[in-house]
Length: 139
Image (cartoon, rainbow, N blue to C red; front, side):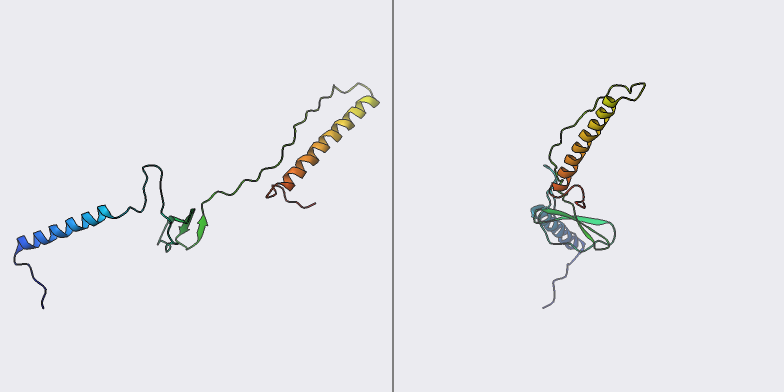
């Protein structure tokens, strides 16, 4: 059975008009790929094919990703920032150096350096023992 052919130009216009209306109706009833009225929402999808140029942002589960034109995929979720324990700041206050050698002034300097070394050791310990370590735990 042959397909019906339009009889005249008016039939062709009416047919095109019906097709445009049908396309508009289906486009308005289809759920959108993204929404942005309350921030951009990306529905969870599989990994898309790489674009010819540029890149694609998409979501897989609850994780955002970027795929570039080379096919490389990168997570857009920021890494967890490790937190170290608190180390109290210290201040060292020494009076001006005496005009001649002074055993007490020298001892004050030694005590101040030892105090600073203790705070530095505490800081290094806290940085190494954070999860994940902020400082490489090499001895």
